[in-house]
Image 1 (cartoon, rainbow, N blue to C red):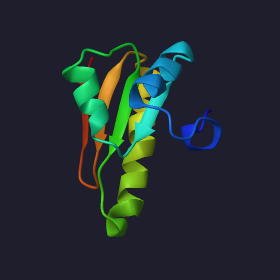
Image 2 (tube, one colour; image 1 turned 45 degrees about the horizontal axis):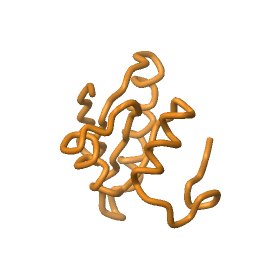
Image 3 (cartoon, rainbow, N blue to C red; image 1 turned 180 degrees about the vertical axis):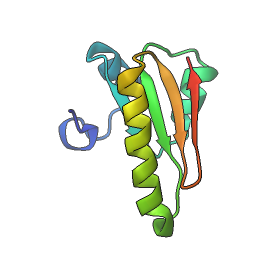
Length: 93
């Protein structure tokens, strides 16, 4: 596991995608810009898990993150996943 915040603070989102692709990794983020990069600019080759929640929703979002990670592990492919307190949306990319 790589923490961009710890190992590469301040790098661009494009460089984050490049690192994730080179490690065959999954980007877990709260930054909505990754959706635009993946879908509008066609920067593909990695998966993204976008977390959208309020502080009061954290416990339920955490449960949904684990559910989504289980799905990702059982179905290895590239996905854009949006996780909220009430749902998990998975879109193959």
